[in-house]
Image (cartoon, rainbow, N blue to C red; front, side, top):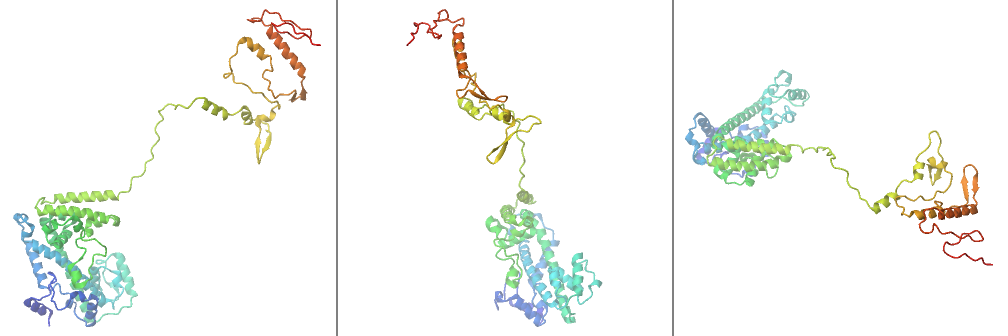
Length: 506
């Protein structure tokens, strides 16, 4: 039975296969049909491709295309842009055309698989070299059974690099020429897939041109194609305006295409979770993968607001949608900017004065404790042109500097004149005649660099001290005892100034 007659009988009985409206004949559960098994049966029985790809032969598709052509040629009156969107005469046609896009995508994938299976005996490597379905069909239509691809012009169909790879691979392929009837079926499939692609482009052109009237602000944000998909899936612009942003973001994830899920099962947008039509719009796909989820949330929130504005027939020029899109793009560009680099700041000018330091007895004692002595200063200095003396201190050698030339005499303690307690003038002469600055640990033996060891007489030193005492006692200006005559004992010693003479004990 002819395919057209079969379709006509089904339409008369009301049981025709309507892919656009999602109706089924009810004889077989279409979910149980494996598309790969169906293609294998088609290839095995050498059936025509139209036995499987029946979309373009459907009466409803032909009627829909006729309606679109009519609306394209008919001018749209301004009164059609007022009132509820669902009452617009073009609205049902627009929703049906949007549903047809999914069916066409599924049909293209089906025909593409058919061409690959039938043309594989001729050029099996061509499938991996040209993954695009439309380009693959065009190249197969041109090559045919030609073995030498140098005689063909493929530059108008493929890039130069791909043409060179295909030409070189064709010289080493193990394929065989196809029979004439096999080649004819392949060419018919190629013509069918090109017809599907042309119909898809016409529908997209119509949808894009009409969405600017029905939902101008929504189309300005995500594009007319995605806006039509969202509106068709939600059930209209009124239903879309009632959906929250969190649900709009995942709208379309359950069914990536009506025709793809029901009829073939080959059409799929991806396997990612919780993504829908909004995730695949141009605004979201323009950013990196790490920011796409965030961008989808932003776009979904703005789409809900734009749908409510379009439902109320406000901002018909779409200026609000353009401002929303610019706001989203600006935020995404800001998020993609690298973090600001750390600037090295110069230290401020030290305008402050000198800080006050702690003073007092504790600080002075600490300074005296860690002050550099004269011996350390002498050790750190040396004469020019003379070798300094070195000594071993543990495991190290230290130089003595100018300390090596010392006489060996032990120097007494020198009191600080600033810390010396005041004394009356009459007592200074008495105290100065004593031992003076001689240290108590000094001895009569002294080391000199000329004579070596020098011996001093202690009696001579004592006589000098007594003479100094007598001289200081007779010094003029003594206030209390200067005019009192001192008695001298028989032994030559001086008696007390006020007491009687001391008796000599026998």
